[in-house]
Length: 79
Image 1 (cartoon, helix red, strand yellow):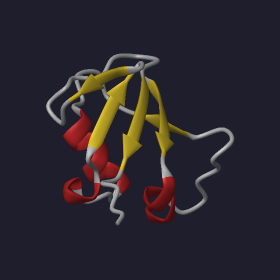
Image 2: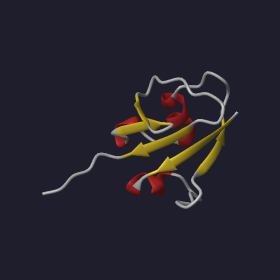
Image 3: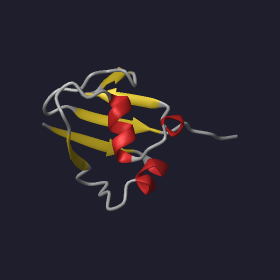
Image 4: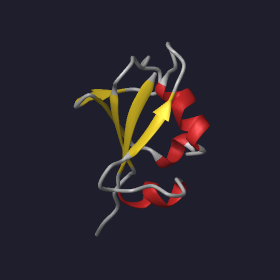
Protein backbone atom coordinates (compact mmCIF):
# COMPACT_ATOMS: atom_id res chain seq x y z
CA UNK A 1 0.00 0.00 0.00
CA UNK A 2 1.45 3.40 -0.90
CA UNK A 3 2.01 6.02 1.80
CA UNK A 4 3.04 9.58 0.94
CA UNK A 5 5.63 10.96 3.36
CA UNK A 6 6.42 14.67 3.58
CA UNK A 7 9.46 15.69 5.62
CA UNK A 8 10.08 19.13 7.03
CA UNK A 9 13.40 21.01 7.20
CA UNK A 10 16.22 19.03 8.83
CA UNK A 11 14.47 15.66 8.42
CA UNK A 12 14.89 15.91 4.65
CA UNK A 13 18.63 15.26 4.96
CA UNK A 14 17.88 11.90 6.59
CA UNK A 15 16.12 10.56 3.48
CA UNK A 16 18.51 10.36 0.51
CA UNK A 17 16.88 11.49 -2.71
CA UNK A 18 13.98 13.19 -0.94
CA UNK A 19 12.21 15.73 -3.16
CA UNK A 20 10.45 18.46 -1.14
CA UNK A 21 8.06 19.16 -4.02
CA UNK A 22 6.71 15.64 -4.38
CA UNK A 23 7.55 14.00 -1.05
CA UNK A 24 8.44 10.34 -0.77
CA UNK A 25 6.16 7.49 -1.78
CA UNK A 26 6.74 4.44 0.42
CA UNK A 27 5.22 0.99 -0.01
CA UNK A 28 4.15 -0.31 3.39
CA UNK A 29 2.32 -3.36 4.65
CA UNK A 30 -1.25 -2.98 5.87
CA UNK A 31 -1.29 -2.20 9.60
CA UNK A 32 2.17 -0.59 9.73
CA UNK A 33 2.52 2.03 12.45
CA UNK A 34 4.22 5.39 12.09
CA UNK A 35 6.99 4.09 14.39
CA UNK A 36 7.69 1.21 12.00
CA UNK A 37 7.62 3.63 9.06
CA UNK A 38 10.25 5.79 10.80
CA UNK A 39 12.42 2.72 11.37
CA UNK A 40 12.11 1.73 7.72
CA UNK A 41 13.12 5.22 6.61
CA UNK A 42 16.03 5.28 9.07
CA UNK A 43 14.71 8.36 10.89
CA UNK A 44 15.41 8.26 14.64
CA UNK A 45 12.16 8.82 16.59
CA UNK A 46 13.81 11.46 18.78
CA UNK A 47 14.33 13.59 15.66
CA UNK A 48 10.54 13.83 15.12
CA UNK A 49 8.45 16.12 17.34
CA UNK A 50 5.18 16.39 15.39
CA UNK A 51 3.45 13.68 13.35
CA UNK A 52 0.50 14.48 11.13
CA UNK A 53 -1.52 11.80 9.32
CA UNK A 54 -3.90 13.16 6.69
CA UNK A 55 -3.64 16.61 8.29
CA UNK A 56 -4.52 15.43 11.81
CA UNK A 57 -2.09 15.22 14.74
CA UNK A 58 -1.07 11.61 15.36
CA UNK A 59 1.31 9.54 17.44
CA UNK A 60 4.03 7.03 16.65
CA UNK A 61 1.59 4.21 17.42
CA UNK A 62 -0.92 5.39 14.80
CA UNK A 63 -1.68 2.60 12.31
CA UNK A 64 -1.45 3.68 8.69
CA UNK A 65 -3.88 2.84 5.89
CA UNK A 66 -3.59 2.73 2.13
CA UNK A 67 -3.09 6.19 0.64
CA UNK A 68 -2.36 7.98 3.92
CA UNK A 69 -0.30 11.19 3.87
CA UNK A 70 2.24 11.43 6.68
CA UNK A 71 3.92 14.71 7.61
CA UNK A 72 6.93 14.62 9.93
CA UNK A 73 8.33 17.69 11.67
CA UNK A 74 11.45 18.07 13.86
CA UNK A 75 11.61 19.98 17.13
CA UNK A 76 12.13 23.68 16.54
CA UNK A 77 14.61 25.67 18.58
CA UNK A 78 15.12 29.33 18.71
CA UNK A 79 16.02 32.19 20.88
